[in-house]
Image (cartoon, rainbow over all chains, first blue to last red; front, side, top):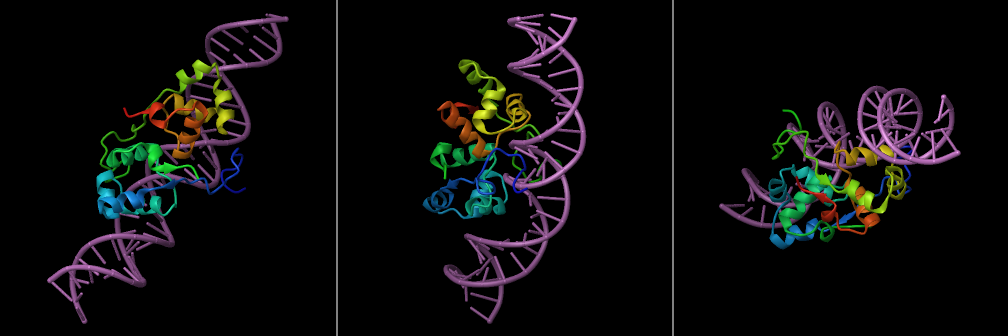
Amino acid sequence: MVCHAGSGRTDCALESMKNRLKVLRAERDWSQQDLADALGVSRQSVNAIETGKYDPSLPLAFRIADVFDLAIEAIFLRD
Amino acid sequence: MVCHAGSGRTDCALESMKNRLKVLRAERDWSQQDLADALGVSRQSVNAIETGKYDPSLPLAFRIADVFDLAIEAIFLRD
DNA sequence: CCATAATGTCAAGCGTCCTTTGCACGTTTG
DNA sequence: CAAACGTGCAAAGGACGCTTGACATTATGG
């Protein structure tokens, strides 16, 4: 009974997407804290997303896209 | 401190985005169940997203974009 | 009249997202 | 050295995402 039982998905526990946050942050010379402040979330959230612990919610993904002035598809990539 | 304290957002409990699922579904004459099957989620999930109860996760948003062959930004809109 | 399809909703349960606090480690700055 | 910064990680708690199961409503067709 891994994952949420009954799920139709097979890639349990690893459906996270890749993202280019670390690179985009580096290009702007921003710390995780800087980005967190710009997004209105905690530094730990930024760190967790960058290190692949989980994906952002859709509203947060939109805010990230806004901050970097990029499309969501240009930041988050299907594995 | 309702909601997640410290959040920069003011619309606590209503940060959901608009979406065009119902229209896109109608254009293809798909039932909620048809879409749910295509996405690999339950019909209730599709219904909840359509009726604005909550937003999909980012991976699910990508699958929705894939199913309709559209960009996420063309389906989900900032309020 | 009865059967079926489509939609909407409620409840319980579990995993994810995001919070706070706190600690560890390496690097940089004074 | 010491103080601060940047990053990573952990635990606990609350809100959200998604599940199953069940029930109600409306519409269509036999």
